[in-house]
Length: 171
Image 1 (tube, rainbow, N blue to C red):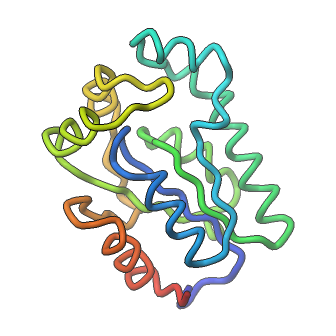
Image 2 (cartoon, rainbow, N blue to C red; image 1 turned 180 degrees about the vertical axis):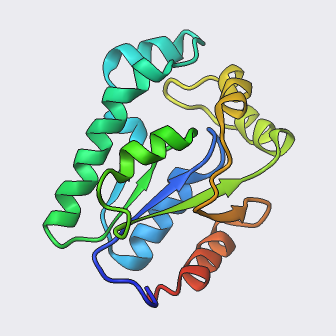
C-alpha cells in the first residue's frame, strides 16, 4: 500500500449479500493473501440463532468478533497480510477488531441499497443467513467514517480493481 507499512489486514465489511466473500476471495487470489470468512468463525449457537431468523445481539457477536481480532493478530504478528470478510456493522465492532492495531487494519465498506442487496439475496442460498435478516443488518449498520466505501453496483472484478487502485495496492 502506498504510504502504509506491510503487513496489513483488509476487512471487507457490509451487510449480508454485499459481496464480502466474493470480493475477498478475488482479492485473495489477486494478492496471494490469506482470506478469512467471518462466517466460518461463528459459534454454533450464533449459527443456529441466525438460521432460525433471529438477529444476533451485541452479546452474541462479542466472542465472535474477539476471535476474528485474534485471527487478524495472528496473521499480522507472523508478518502476513490478510483479508477478512466480516459484517462489522457497528463502530464498536470495528473498534474491537482493530484493538491496538489502528495502523495495521483497514476497512473497505461494500455499500449498496436494500433493494439491490435484497434482489441478490433472493438469488442465493446461504448456509444459515436467511434474507429475512437483511433489514436487521441495515438497522444495525453504523456507516463507518474511517473506511473506503465502495458501491456494489459494479461487477466484482470492477470492485476489486477499485479497491486496489484506491488503496494503492500493487498486485
